[in-house]
Length: 162
Image (cartoon, rainbow, N blue to C red):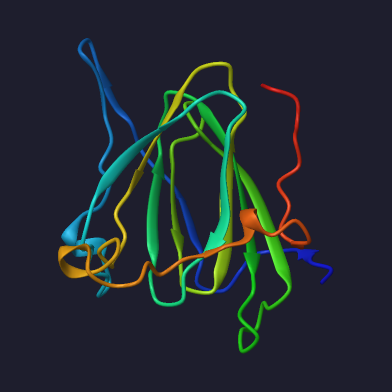
C-alpha cells in the first residue's frame, strides 16, 4: 500500500509544557480534566538505546497515550490502517523528545513505531487504556507486530542520528 503524508483522524499530538526551575523540570503527563473519557489502565516507562527502533505495530482495541519528554529525541511514525477512517492511507511523522516535549495519542488501528535518533538513551512513558495481556496477564496480547513481517508496508527509515 502507498501512503500519503497527512494528519490522521483520532491521533492527537500536543506539545507539552516543561515547568523549569533550579531543581530541573516537571511536565504533566495527563490531567483528569483533559482526559475526555479516556481511562488509562496502566502506565509504564521504557528506555530505548540510540539508533534503536520500536515497532511498527498496531492494536485492535488499545489506545496508546505516549509521552516523549527526553532525555533523547525520537522520530515517531504513524500510518492510518483503518479502512473506515476518513484518513485511511495517511502517514504522519514527527520528532519529539528533549527539544520538543510531546504527547501522542494513538487510537486502535493506527500503526505506530518510533526510533531513538539521538546519541543518548531515551525515555518514553505510555499510559494505555488496556492492560498488557489482560487481567492477571491471562489474555492474548492486543498487538499486530508489523516489524516481524519482512514484506510490510510500514517501514521506519534509518535517518542519520541527530
